[in-house]
Image (cartoon, rainbow, N blue to C red; front, top):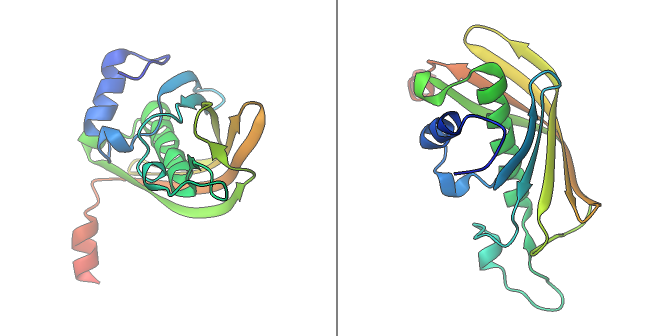
Length: 170
């Protein structure tokens, strides 16, 4: 179970029905969730088994680090938490979501393997309808008081939309 400020059963439901298997949910602890401010603070243990970092060829010119792909996957996990906990988008009730635009992705320095990352996300714009939620987020990831990543991204969540049927029809 991932510790955090929510009912354990609700987080377990989130994880059991999440759009990716739990191994791809790269958040190890949720430190705070503020529904009014639409903000989440979480932590990533960089010593955990990371899907790309474990395959790095490490030497003095290429130190072990959390890859850019993993950092972007973390933004997706945080975005899905916003959708679930703040907007009621439940995967087991027909909702699905997709990141649709990276407006800005600034990798400020390598995120070293070892110290944890402090993950901050908040919604900057939100449009909510009965079967669609569109959000824009800002992300700031810190390691040992240094900014590692900041981003500005958008995601869309839809209810009961068959993307396979739509792809076949077009």
